[in-house]
Image (tube, rainbow, N blue to C red; front, side, top):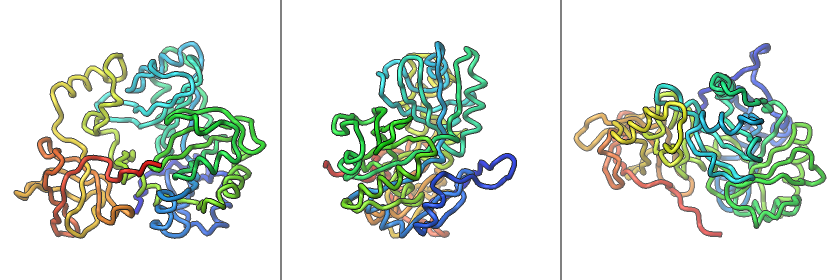
Length: 379
């Protein structure tokens, strides 16, 4: 079950936007829902079927609702180094980096990916629900006058995920995918399309695979090309619901659930993308927080009694004290048990700690576990 909380509606029509593939999804029988101000496919068949297709074979997601900002010019790196928590100076050309935009009060404006083309050209890929907020935030901090361009409305993005993604895409792309390291990207050809095409060894599923950027006018052709190339691998279109179960099995944070404007990266276990060898927005306060410790921490847990945790359910300790709240939860298709993430009071985060999840007025037993919940098999 995916929880829809955000709306970013067209300013004039106040109606949800459509990706270039809206008609393709409808013809494929997708159940369409409003998500982050876009009409998006929730599922085509069943969540279980789509989830297993990605874990065992290949699936394609339309994630064209995501936002893309180009940051260019002499001061591009300076701006990104200041507004993001991670250190882009360690990046080489053609690398991607996971990071976040800290706010001034200790929380997170958004999490994002940084793509480095060269020292003066970068692309930021942000969450759809936060596009407008992120743009305004970065603009506000852009006192060094770096060049900024929002290319979101002209850019389509697909995720081809699963163990068969590489051989499938290699049939129709020019980059040697076997030589691409995780979190790198290349410009290339997809079918006969070279104009603006980017292939990135990234994803939000833990199943391996790639993300592909093309201009909107090529979106339908590229989607059809990938579907045709993937027939022998059993490729299926995948909706948002399975995307949510896949990311949760890996313990990946979802903005609006597990992280938001009130959660710090230290609380959320994102200290590994929060580098204090540089100055960035609110870095002094976050450094003090890391040194002093936090009062709550984001943890993963598995149910040991039958039950499905959901966002907003309360968490208790064995003494019946309220110690936290569930931020994400589902029935894991791969593990066959309820799993979830949530914030608990410090001192309750150690793996093996017994906790109770209040599910429909019943307190059910669960254990804190190390993330990820699902360990992908080596291919």
